[in-house]
Image (cartoon, rainbow, N blue to C red; front, side):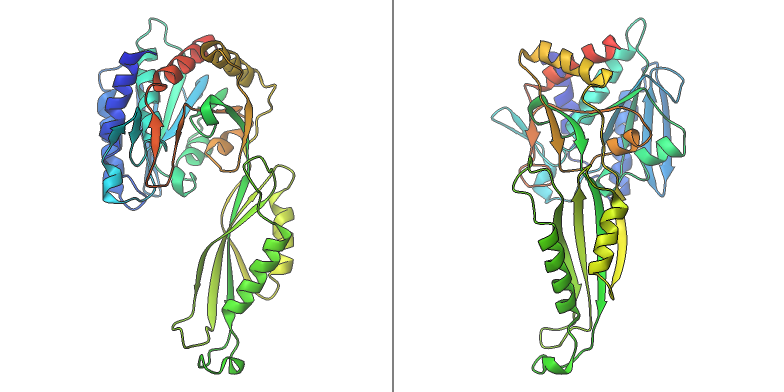
Length: 363
């Protein structure tokens, strides 16, 4: 569907994927933004670039306003990968490469869509928000633009989650914790003469894991806990006198952050507990007008029923819903984000373009 649009989207995605726009590569991030600005240079659009803590963002709008009717929200930063992952490849109808699914292909789609809508005789009131820090929290991108620069909208759309065009209307909240312990060093052959800091941390993690056993699958809607990193000790034959664990805790809308932290503090009594990152859950009711309108258009174009879905991961959508702005999370098929097998299905990009085109013009 719409093969000419699919070809244009694919061309842009293949130009963006080789740019290694990771968190520690500001030059490549800037190259991405320059490519995007050059793409729009002949269009009658309002472009503004912002920077917060050395993280640049770009806002493109069809009207001179900070409050368009709808914001399309994408990001050009990607997680680290091997050299070969930054070489885009097409195989069996799929585009492979770092950012193919998360989120350079969808950035390309949003660029083409915004340009085409801007060329209409009476262009709709839309904005395109492109950030460079989503993978590390989004505080200097989306959050900064909304809370410090005063941007807003009636509704936000993010090409996130929604499996096979499903609509994700709720995400889990997230808390990243660092738990530190001090002990007493001793020779590894005489552990009774020391105090093993890692033993304390493992005991705490075991208690937390018993309290929050991991879900069995995406639909097992409860708290999850992941021990992502352990630090400690100096040598294998020495009792470690220090240590730290880093935990990734995802919580559902049945809980509140402070409620969880009170429980964790009790279990970590005597140890140092730090919250190193946090994000509230994102939620828009299923009966919201914008969600229902988008669902209706999707079902018309796809010729089948579309489901509302829950997501265990987080997005920058939370910054909008926390301000009372309805947020739609949906996308065309893709997968393998953050892996060495990241892909997006090419043929359905045109379908996704058409869905968004009709949705925006219906508002």
